[in-house]
Length: 239
Length: 222
Image (cartoon, one colour):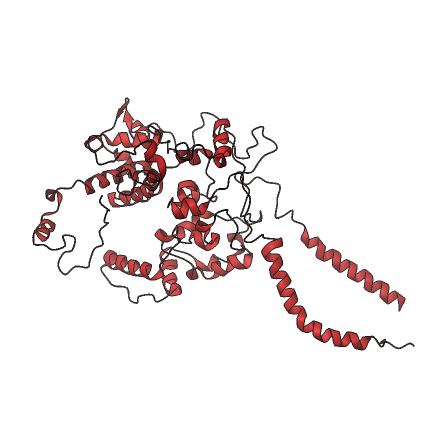
């Protein structure tokens, strides 16, 4: 019977010690790079037929999200504005801008603009905007600081782990209902307002003023009738 | 020895196949339409279909002229119809809803207090056409139905908002516009007697002595 191990095995054995130390790190870096760019295209602006700027319309002009995303409180889909919505202002403003020619052409010919999708969930996930917004999950939590994006890009990776993080503990991110559209949310001002309104409505002071997001969140989860137990059931998102 | 090697290679190939089979995306991109999808089937390429002309959805038969059109026999109704009030638990809820809708859809041009100085007006609209203020005698005396009609069908360069604001919300906006008008045109006699007394004594009229401070909505005056 020949020798089982060749003499080069010694070198391999030494190399494997070094590799074993580096491999996990390398694997982690490769996975994170892939999850950021190749698969989910995180932080990569998506080119559109019209260079629409959320930063200009939302941040600078202060137009509310729902002005264009009309169905966000009522339906699963937040609603992409028809050209009619763009033209409610742009029939009067920037009427000569060449950048807006596709919009005017779309309105003249009654053919929709073809926007490119930025957020695309797998088809086996049934996300509903209205329930999230109405229960107090802010736009900002899923869409990041979209109000500061010149060209819209994905800034949050909507992985299943990320969904579950909130579904298991919504108190970490929930806000009072009237603060969901806010991009400069002030937790302590919101707590103060909440305590004020509680005192006014019930005539009693809060037993304990919440000191942080989680304590405040627990009150809000209760107020919004969120059944945390069923929130991580499969059927909540997969039908 | 050689057999072992073949078995080893075959095993590896099989493992590779099993792993690669996890990479197909047909569950991610199912052959179904999502909202706003492009269709290859319909000639207008829209996956979202329009209901057949003349279709009326349950509960949406718009027979009540006063409620749905703000006018009876072509004449604007003078007051908000009771059917609109009935859609809200109380008038306070209605005003709150109206405020939220107003600040979303009207405020960009008409301004937060209704002086016609919203951001869009300031950013160029008023150079072409002055956005009217609500605080003119003409608009103070006009029928409630007029505002409803303007929201529904547009007016001048203003586009119709009927696709964006539901009928009961339009009436809530009308109520809020009336509240704005009152806020800029109130007389001391409109105040409750005790609040007026507090004002005359130089105290804050909104705060009853000893009570918790109420945060009244303050509107920015010109």
